[in-house]
Image (cartoon, rainbow, N blue to C red; front, side):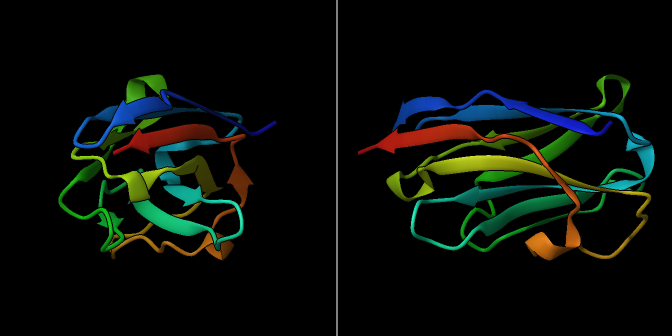
Length: 128
């Protein structure tokens, strides 16, 4: 049974930092596509960052490039999203997503349709 469990959300002031974690289980973590998405009520889900767990190749949306960093700890089957220089517009529910048995070296896709499994989400609130 595939499980993705996010943690690390919270409230922070503009300019602050947070680190989100996603612990994965139930699938072969080492050859997967994984990513972070966010959604604000009434708006479309946005792909924030993606990574191939096999090659480590990553990609970012233009809105977070240079501020967010996606990373892996393969020993812990955990993916992270380090978020720096947070802005009020980063406020959203953040979701971890995965697509097992995928290998790639090109920039990972940031479309939700490319991912199969989703976590329950963790809320990030940035105040001005």
